Amino acid sequence: MALSSLPSQREKKMYVVFKVHSQGALQYHMVRAAVPDALLDFLGERGTAAARARLVKNLWNARERTGFLQTTPKAVDPVKVALALIHQIGEERVAFQTLRVSGTIKAGKGALGRKR
Image (tube, rainbow, N blue to C red; front, top):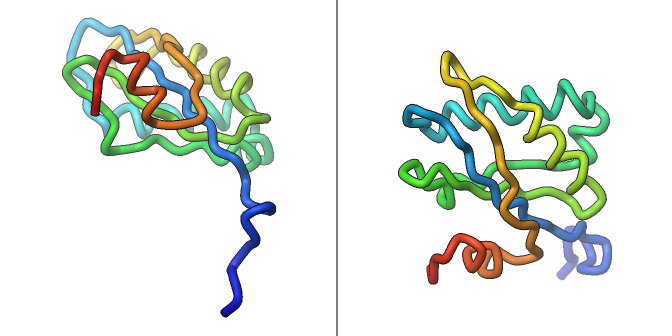
């Protein structure tokens, strides 16, 4: 039985826990459209590909406007800057705040005060 990639060759994952400050409600699909655009603008295509950033859909909380962005350890700081540069989603003025950077989802949820 052959492995697709050895565990030692796998990229580590880091999670950026963020909160979006806005006046109105934001849906997941709105944030999902804005984040890759901001990453492309700031990092370029090569940097965005190297960051391997993706929003974790089932951890988006529309009521509290918090979410998790998975990325590589080397790309954490550039991804945080790219998020901070998002000022508008649709017609809504927004501000992204990084709450915590974590190596596990469980520790990230602790920053939000959630058990599960």
